Amino acid sequence: MKKIIFLFSILAFSAISVHGQSIAKNALGLRIGDNDGFGGEISYQNYLSDNNRLELDLGWRNSKNVDAFKLVGLYQWVQPIDTNFNWYVGVGGGVGSFDAGDNDGIFALVAGDIGIEYNFNIPLLISLDMRPELGFNDSYSNDLDLDIALGIRYQF
Image 1: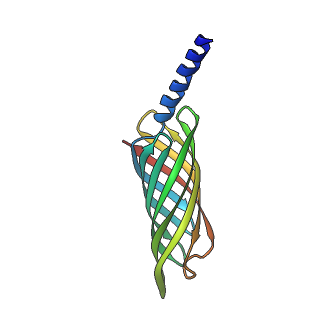
Image 2: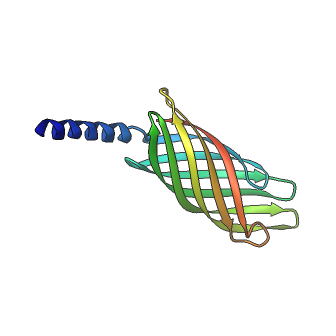
Image 3: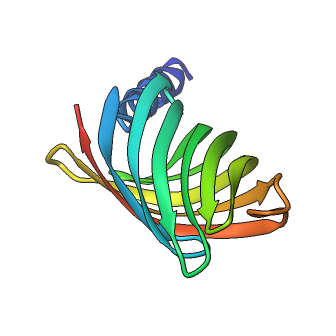
């Protein structure tokens, strides 16, 4: 019985140590997506704990009717799927400004986030995620928008 408990303890500590290595301390890169027009974001991720991180994205959107800049912050929970392969879910909010010709202003939004990522053996992280955003400005967006994006980040 002692051998089984010892073996189980070794396996548990191994799983915890592998899981703790799945999130880089920092990651910086680009997130390219389509949310009411093509746009990109400069994306920064900061390690908070073994399975939590903070993501900050400064982005722009360009469509036929409106151009916008926004800053979004998300708190994310990261869970391993397989070696170097994770899924994550998050929640947050943001603010921004828009220009729609004769109409321009500021807006606020709340956002969720769900995605998958692959952590290469080199300091490169690639992700695919969906971010539903609920905007609070009738002139820009007052409904639910889905932002699907591909991210590529350098980890350090």
